[in-house]
Image (cartoon, rainbow over all chains, first blue to last red; front, side):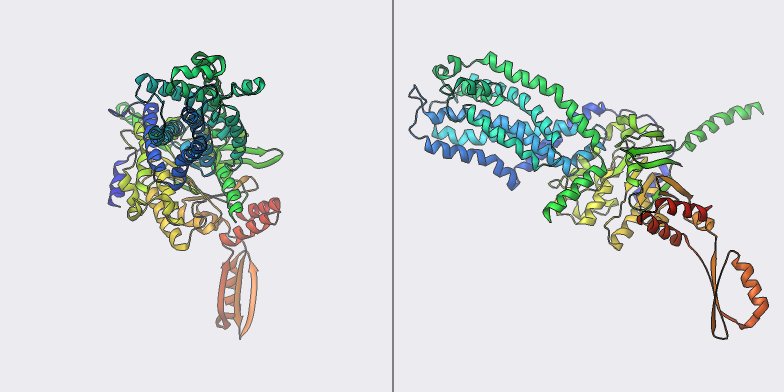
Length: 308
Length: 322
């Protein structure tokens, strides 16, 4: 209280002076980017102490372990390589796609409804910081999800190149490229649904894509038209990329074109990334422009009615 | 003389900067489809002034404040907020504003002090010699009375505590102009009083405040000046006292003579009472003179407005306030 009194004394007008960049603070955009990283780290930490998030982390692992159980003794068709060991990298690829697409989509839809985005909008460079924070959060969650699947499985499966540096480097760049391809898509879909419960409709086609993308079973035996559909979307290529990182080179022989097709993979994932990075900012800006106190209040009203 | 004049010139310039309006709204219009919500809103606010935008629900208060906040595009009219058109306000402008939002469940996993410290970081590059931004998180937590809850998770706060956090977030960048949209909706009387104290403290620091409310009592308690918005336009503008005085219309005089009750309505209550005493002298008892207050007139306006007779209500109000 006494602080307030003294403050009012030394805050003389005119106050509308230009901001003097204080030493060491940096430009506002840079500060916002740094704040975004801080925000992402805080939210990542929060995700490890939250039941819902922990479930999301461990649920894919559970599914994978169940799948692994049923695959016991099965081999990749045409080889004597363990089918389970082939499935693991494919599931890692799927995890990257899910993190980029679903985590961001649901996050945006939810935080638009609850007013988090409006708060960001009311703060200088807040939207920018918010998005940087989301990128950090989604990337961190993707890494954590992958580690949670990879670590226990590595004790149960043989034949994976887990000690090779090149394998880890490939895994890393495929992951980065995969996130670049899927995060903008997540942002676009997340901006389209004002009701997070409707965002679930995206999950049906995504699950369909998983089924035809060779995650759990090689698709080289599938009808060609189905293979072609799968190869339009990022999930197939992420699975392939992760397999190329962790599986022995001989296994490329059972893939389409009998190769890991890195160039094609970079082409398709890169195209998704470029299109996404062009479209996402437009969609995000349009969405942000529409946010206001009354639009959040209207959504709150609706959500309240649902819970009644 | 010439020397004195020259010395005066910069001082006059300084005063001019000071006198600049924090808010200037000229013929603001807003139309949704074929519905006119605002049909020409005009008002100004001086730096340091606390202005209440008062009006019945649906009068366009929120639309007005959202246009000023830069969250909504206007259909027509001139608007200047801290000298800038809010439709083209940059981040530098944004940093000088505070918007108190009605939170619902955002940032539920964050802790109170943690969030205030984090959001404050965005304002640091906009610090000036006069205004040190942001507000220190510990001081801010104390100012809004949340010290005890500083390390609580936000989703564990009560409704009243959450609203105080909303205010803290709105002022974390030490705004020169603060917007509050229906700040005490859903408050109990205790929380409302605490909130009013907080607004007074902010006003003491020369923060210009624009708040919306549908509660006349609140407008009277908080604002230096009340703007009544109805029918898409400002129909009255002045301090609570001025508005009440302007309504010196008919008064009701009640008295008794030998146990018999009398009631008389008159424009000139003083003259009528003088006459009364001249005629009846000591026989007059239980004398009462009651003037229709701002509240009576405002309540009539609201009732008419809500009954869908907006135009009639506004006309009636304009007649009495003129």
